[in-house]
Image (cartoon, rainbow, N blue to C red):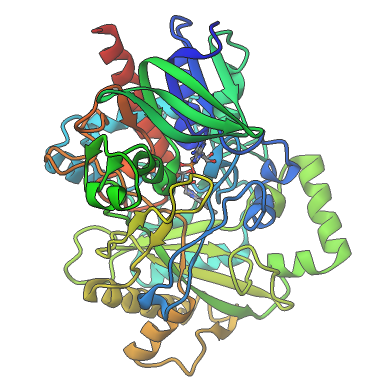
Length: 535
Ligand SMILES: Cc1cc2nc3c(=O)[nH]c(=O)nc-3n(C[C@H](O)[C@H](O)[C@H](O)COP(=O)(O)OP(=O)(O)OC[C@H]3O[C@@H](n4cnc5c(N)ncnc54)[C@H](O)[C@@H]3O)c2cc1C
C-alpha cells in the first residue's frame, strides 16, 4: 500500500471513526487511513467499566477541556471530558445504551433531512448491535457492538423502580424498544463484564486488514485542499509534519469540539473571523462551530440508611477485595457496571408530548463525577433535560490544533431550560419521598432542605450543574444552505469532504449519544461507498 495516498482518510478514531474505518475497509477494495491524535487504548482501566472514574481526568486518555466562564452557571468553567486515543469517548464513557426517541429522528427528517426518519435509521441501530437479549423487531444480535443487561439487581435500584411506579411512571425493560418512557435498568456496552468500546467492537477486528492503516499520536492540523476539493490531511506525529493524500474523500470524525475546530483551521468556517486570525478562507461557512447543544445534569445526592451502596464497598479493603473477586471470578458486580445502573424517562413540563427529562441513578455518590465517593452510604439521582433550547458555539482560540478551542456552552440560557431544570429537580424530590424509598433515603445531602423555592433550585442548578457529556450539533446537518453538511453529510461548498460524528446532529437526541453517533457512522459508511461507486 502507498503509505501517503489512500482512498479515504479519516480523522479521529472515536465512536464514529472506528465504525467508518471498519466499514470502508471491509470489502478490501479501498485503502483507508485512520488518524488518531491519542494513543492505543492500552490502559487497563479503560476496559473495566468502573474505570470510568480513573479516566475522567486522565491527562493522556482525556482531552480535559473546559468551557469558557458560563454566565448561566455562575460564571464557572464547566469541565468537558472527551476521550483521546483509540475508541475516543467510547473508551471513557459511562457505557449506557440509549438510542433516543423515535420522534428525534422524525424531527430530523422533518427539517428536510431525507433518509433520517426513525424508520430509516432503525435498520442501522439493528445492524450495529450485538444485543445479548437476541434479535427482534427492534434489536439485532449479529452486529459488532455488544449491549448487555446488568445481571446484578440492586435493592436500592429496585426501590427506585417501585417508587417511580407510585408516581405513575411505567416500568420499562427496554428503553430502546417501542417506547422510551418509563423506569428500569439500563443495558450497557459491555461484553462479558468488559467495556465494549467502538475500538473493541469495530477497529480491533479490522486491524489485520492490509488495506487499513491506523496511525496513533497523529494530530490532524488541517485538511488540505486542491482548489475547493479536499485532497488530504496534514498531521503532526512525533514532532514531524506529514501529509496523507485522499483519492476519494477526507472524513472528519474528531468530535463535536474538534471537528469544527479542524474545519475552521482548514479555512472552512466563518470567513470574517478566520481572516481576522490570518487564516486563508477556502469557503465562508458561518455555521461551522455554531449550534452547540449539550445535556446538563443536576445531581441530587442522598444519604442512605444502610451500608448497601458502592460507596461502602469502595471504602473498605475487604469491600474492594470482594468487588475485585466478583469481577475476576464471575465478571459481575460493581466493577462490571460502571456508575449508573438504571434510568427514568418522564415528562415534567405540561407542553411536552414525549419525555423531557432523563434520570440516571447510581448507587454511589461523590461531589463531582469521577471524584472520591463520600465516606457514608450514598446514592445519586442525576436529572437532565433531554431537549435543551440553549445554544452555544465552538470558536478558534488560536491557529493551532494543539490548543483547545473556545467552548461557549451557554447552559441554562433560556427560560424554558430553566423551568425544565427546576421541574426535574422537583420530580426527583417527589420520587425520593415515595413509600418505596422512605426506608432507604434518610437525608437529601445536596441540594439539601434549605433549597425550597424555584429560585433556590435554579441557583443550585447553576452552582452545581455539570455536563452529562453529550455535546453535539456544531457541524449541523440540514437541507438549508446555511447548514454545514447536507443529508449525505457532505460539507457544503467544497468537494471530497464529509463530517461524520456527534457534530452533525441537527439537534440533540433525547438520550445518551454514543449509539446514535455509531448509527450515524454506520449510515454514513453506506452513503460514502454508494457515492464512491458512482465515481
Ligand atoms: C465521560 C463521558 C461519559 C459519557 N457517557 C455516555 C454514556 O454512558 N452513554 C452514551 O451513549 N454516551 C456517553 N457519552 C457520550 C458519547 O461517548 C459521545 O457522544 C460519543 O463517543 C462521541 O463520538 P464522536 O465520534 O462524535 O467523538 P469521539 O468519540 O470523542 O471521537 C473523536 C476522536 O477524534 C480524536 N481527535 C480529535 N481531534 C483530532 C485531530 N485533530 N486529529 C486526530 N484525531 C483527533 C479524538 O482523540 C477522539 O478519539 C459520554 C461521553 C463522555 C466524555
